[in-house]
Length: 203
Length: 203
Image (cartoon, each protein chain N blue to C red):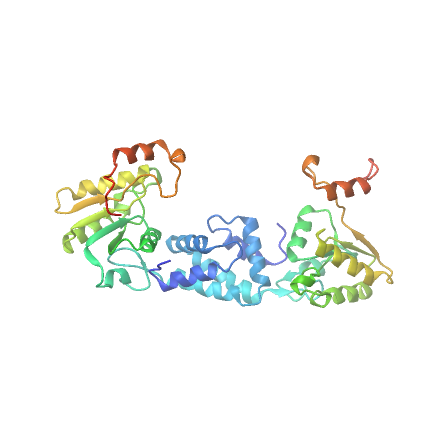
């Protein structure tokens, strides 16, 4: 591409390092910002600058936070004896959006994936074990994606917790609401039949 | 969405003002930047800051430039008597990428579009007329999209130039290379038959 401006070229290069943004999309975004008259570029720059320098990881649950300990860990309104173990901060947000969970969280920071060189030591698993001891946790809910790596992680953590006085549960797997049975994959459909529930169960 | 961090929320808000970036994509991008360990957020922030404050418009051709006059206007290696009139800086880049044009450019900054409230006065048309006088331009090539607004703009400018000693041409319209005739729209195909060329034409 023939850029008439070095500044534009650098912005396109920086924007195209974002996931899912190619050279052409990056150019479109940069030109949009150049032509914008509402200081959008300056605002975005300031926000990203703070994102890069001021965001912290909560010391208790490893969630993204503005302070040393996040609001979810500090609040007194939640059941502090139930921990929901998730992969990432995104999953905390997804579960919070459901309004169905009132306990605390623990963010692993990924799943065990030997192919990507991620072992148990790279995740906050030892911190989780410490928390279960220190905070007298009664139940650990594994809200981890049912992929091969996710299942491995669930298996690894539940093995670690067998000798501890804590209940380990996993979120239900089955056909999605609004989904057509015809299009559900065999494994999911098969598991949903094996793990069938009595119909008068409380949702 | 339940954000655990105000800083993250602000970044997501700023990112989602970009064209084609919704709330969910913005969140994905922001979380990517948070988790990145190569200072990507700081680099992007710095690049966008310069984009917002340091980019200028070339005083001669209205192209995007780092200086008061852009490199394309300053160079002595190009035919300064042929002007290619385009809508935007993006079009200059597209034509430069073809390596088929060796003249100078003039960027209108849009097309006449009464529905969007864009009239001739909002575009750099008077500057174009001044340039044609001042620089003794011999040919003006209209490289403007063949849309209704584009055609209106071409008509308006060519009307303005009728009394001036300048040749006005438009880029060829017809079926695209690699395109299937079957899928070409009727107007394009019809026009390509009307504007047919003798076969031994030089490409």
